[in-house]
Every structure is written in structure tokens, then in C-alpha cells.
Image 1 (cartoon, helix red, strand yellow):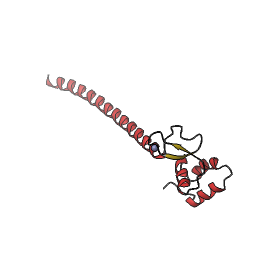
Image 2: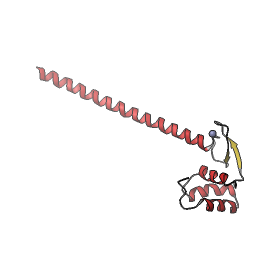
Image 3: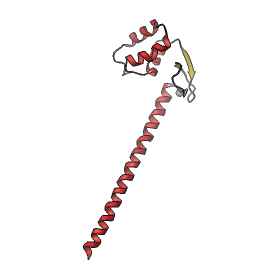
Length: 123
Ligand SMILES: [Zn+2]
């Protein structure tokens, strides 16, 4: 909700209620508020003015407001947030692991050079 900047919740609700094509208005409101469709849907649902379709979340079974051509995964906003957090963390771990490998390769190179130099030193 913190992303709502230019428009107040009441303005969002009013603009939705007065829109000719309510479904088309939702992505527009998301753009206007620099927010996302899920946030707008949540606001409209909380205000009990959403009069579109509801879907069942394939993960938790909860009913959530939906618009067409949005959310092909059929998951509610919370489950999608969770899934996105999981994949972000997985990506971060992968990135860290490749950094670790890079450092290990670098250390192996240094070790090799050091061994050579020390052998030379001993003579
Ligand atoms: Zn869910």
C-alpha cells in the first residue's frame, strides 16, 4: 500500500466506480499510482466496490479478485509474492555460489604461483 502516491485510495475508488470499462481501468489506476494491479484489486475489494471476477488460488485455495489477461498462474497476490521472494532468494544464492567459485579459482591460481616461487626460493 505504501506505493500509492499520486492518488488517494478514495480517488482510486471513485475513478473505478465512474469508469465505463472497469476492468480496463484497473491497469490504468496501477500506472497512475506507480503501483500494481494486485494492489489496486486489493483496495477495490477492501472497499467492497470490486464487481469483477474472482478466481481460486491454486496454492492456498483462497478466493481473490482477478481481471482477464492477468495472473495466468492462478495464484492469489500473497502466494505470488511468496513465490517471487523464493525465486529471488534462489537467484541470490546462485549468484553468491558463483562468486565463491570465482574466489576459489583465484585462490588456487595464487597457491600454484606461490608454490612455484617458494620452490624457487628454496634452491
Ligand atoms: Zn494463495
